[in-house]
Image (cartoon, rainbow, N blue to C red; front, side):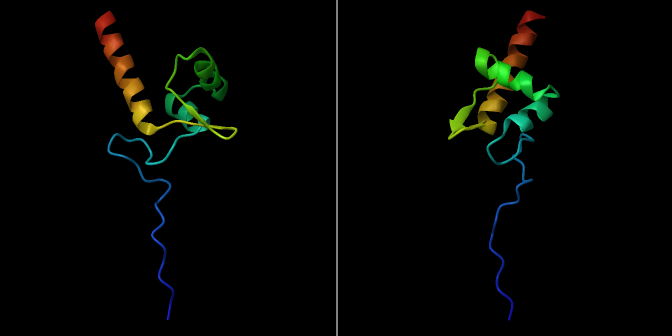
Length: 81
């Protein structure tokens, strides 16, 4: 008799918005926006990028906050055009 598999979420699962259904890392943000990871850290330092938060010594980003940041940036860009 085999043991039932635990229902672990797929780490690659995504939300409808195309973002992963998990907290994002600085590496994820850098890959997503196609910028160096150092740029992501500078955004955080200058408070110009998507808002992140600390979990111990690690920085994480809520996908909903990243989506809101992108939406706001797109709105600002459309108004400036």
